Image 1 (cartoon, helix red, strand yellow):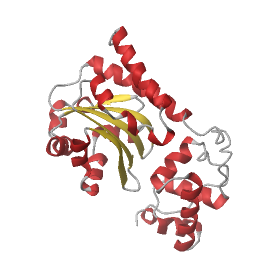
Image 2: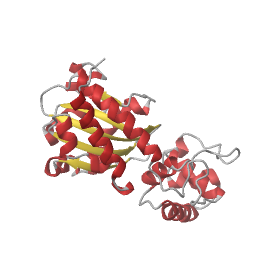
Image 3: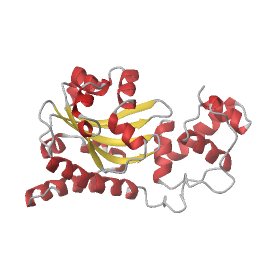
Amino acid sequence: MARFSLSDYRQLWAVASRAITCEQSEFPGTLADADLAGLFQADAVDSCLIDLRTGQSRQVGGHPAELVALCVEVPSEFHAFLSGHPAVRYYQRGGDEPAVNSSELTSRREWRGSPSFAYLREHGGMGEQLVIRVTGSPGLVCGIAVMRAVTPFTDLDLGMAKELGTVLSGLHLLRRPPHLSAESGAGTRLTPRETQVLILWQDGLTGGAIARRLGITARTVDKHAENLRRKLGTPDRTSAVVRAQSLGLLTVPHGLRPEGLSEQDGRD
């Protein structure tokens, strides 16, 4: 087990303190900056939200901006890179480590021969990567990637990343407006039908598949979607699901989960 020095703990506390005091809308993207890069002697830091079921991915922070921006010029390529990434697959399968070293999830040879490694080298010149999980559930991953061009990360680096991941995951659960409790979701009232649409969003169903599952029109689904985005204060379905999860709104009451859709119906 890696041994941390007093200086290591001070640096970790400095990052945690910023996480505690930053605005809700800035968390966790604002942490992907020069200070976090300095903590790990990294060449770049990036924070992303990935929904593998809906095909939506977005960057929420990064440093240096001019380097990280190269990685998201073509959204479809960026999502393909993330979808096949070994760290994302690890969390998709239910992995619970607060941080992982991408090159250690497979053999180093397999990592260096992977499309994810090739993408990092081509678009950012990076070859080594720690991924710190902020939150993760089946199909949804929000995390911070700490990257170096050449020098491998040490066990101490990974240990510090795990400590930080544990703290940030806890803060993610706590960072919600006080009037929206996790127990009841008070302040955000969803109708039973809106809750069903939200559940099916979480399951990765398309608008057409949701309409068939619920026996309503696509236009009605769009109306429920509009109401959900407004009530949750989010711009898209991915962030709406993440927001609802953090508020405890996706604890499904008995009888509300729709059943009976075929696998093929959920894909179109």
